[in-house]
Each structure stands twice: as C-alpha cells, then as structure tokens.
Picture 1 (cartoon, rainbow, N blue to C red):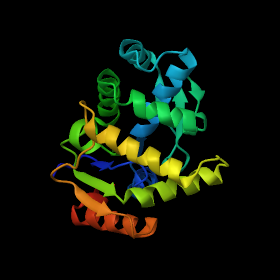
Picture 2: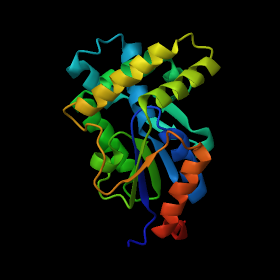
Picture 3: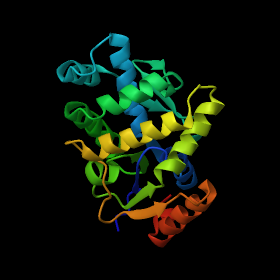
Picture 4: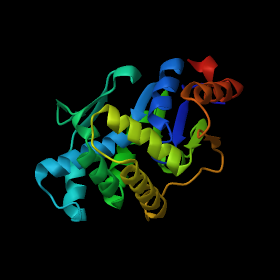
Length: 229
C-alpha cells in the first residue's frame, strides 16, 4: 500500500448521510474534506445570479468554468466560497438545491468539477463525498464507501432537516423530489450514480449516524488507513 496519505470516497444517493459522515471521517483521520455536492450548488448559485437559462448548456458550462469555487475551513465548519464570497448558507436554499441537480447533469459542468476535484485531492489526504467520487473522480481511491437507504427514509431525513430550517414543505413533496433526483442521477449520460465494484456498501436505513461511522472506521482500520494520519 502507498505510504502517501489516503484518498477515501463516499458515494450514494441524496439523503444517505454522505456529508455528515464525510465530515466525521475526515475529522477522525485528520484529512481534508471535499464536499463535491457543495461545488455543484455553487455553480447553480452562479447560474442564478447570472440570470442564465439552466437549459443553455454552453452558457452554464462557461459560467462553471469561470466560477472561482473554494472550500475553506475544517470539516466541522466548512465554508463554500464563490468568487471570494462566503455562500455556505445561500447554497442550501430549496431553489439552489433544485437547480444544482439540473446543472450537475450537464456533462461539461461535471467534467470541469471533476477536474477541480482531482486537482484538490491529487496528493491524497482527502475524504470526498458525492455521486461519482469512487467511480470517476478517483477510481484508484484507497477506500470507497457507498451509502444508501430506502427512498422513504432518506426523504424523512430531508423533511426533518427542512422543517428545522423552517422551510414549508410536505413529506410527499420531499419524497417526490428524492425519487426524481435518484432517477436523474442514475440515468444521466455523464458520470451516472453507480456502485464501484470495490466499494464497501452500507445500508443506513436502520442505523444511526454513530453506528455507520463506527463501521466506516472499522473498515479504515482493517485497511491500515488510520495508521497513515
């Protein structure tokens, strides 16, 4: 095994717990955390601010290429910067979330973000979460996880998160959105959501966040990755 700091990827559908567990794993192993979904959200926000048509692939791709997107801070306080401005909260709005799922399906946008993600993790020492981090971004990753859960459970988690943010949505609305996102992510032509052949698959439906985290740490220890901190 390489002596460089490891590359760990966490893929899975929306609401499977990737971001929370990615932060926990990065913190425990003292690795850089890369939230790839936040990068696509930043592109979506840039498209909104430009007043561009999200169906105009060429324009959206150009916006993605020009956007200066940076991830700053530690896993517990990750800040997303767009052209020098902290947009960490703004990219979590319902409008940006919806548009992010649209622009992330544009091949030119994905290729630009994948290029940047590879640059960020080129020297190892990273935990990335997203949809294609173990299949496309870093197929040579030292450890790959794929987290999943039933659509109903993932929708319930999202529903509770949105209620906590005082967003007026019904459970049925959220479930419909989760199913639509699943279909869009798994059927797109470029970098579709799929399970890497060498990924460790964990169904989180009946598990607590702490249960999943302990399982992930157990696998990391088995692979000797905790010794490379």
